[in-house]
Length: 208
Picture 1 (tube, helix red, strand yellow):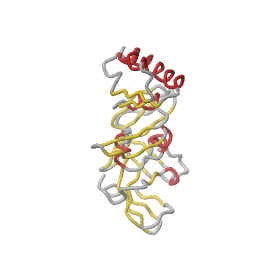
Picture 2 (picture 1 turned 30 degrees about the vertical axis):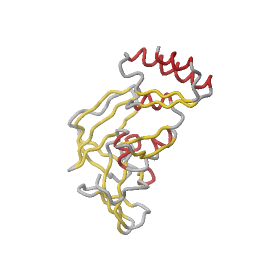
Picture 3 (picture 1 turned 90 degrees about the vertical axis):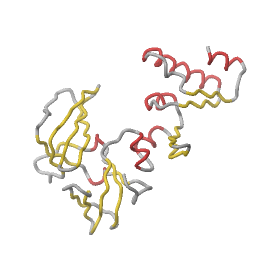
Picture 4 (picture 1 turned 135 degrees about the vertical axis):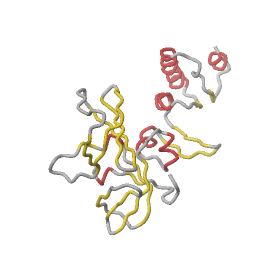
């Protein structure tokens, strides 16, 4: 009803502040579709304030992530997900594999962890992100970068999310497929290609 009253005035800008927060999931999903259709049909600017990432990704063409009144990053869904500007944005998105590393003589070492990897990067300190889907079970003929114990697993629609502990660090790994061959307590060997490691544009010397 509130949306209908606003549309009667034929506004140039429609502002919605947490409009779906008190609704059940099915009704929320239907209203997301309706809002998107209204926006496209009326060709007007719509601003939606939400803490729900799925809601933002579904409805929006452009997303701005804010903290303490400051805009941390603005971009489309693909940019926000795959190229977070700094670790604050990555944490807000729910990414777990955030680490401080040092690069010296083309070798990267994660601080406080026994993890080393050759990488073509200038010497210095960096904050890095390992995307869960880019960490894979290492083949026998490939050097193992990471050895850890599975502490937890969660079933998703197209696979599993595994929580892996290695020394003083914890990692989150996504495994696709229907068959669950990864058991709690099991020691696994993992690998991440150097080209997949994400170096943040900003905050390379800030604490994570």
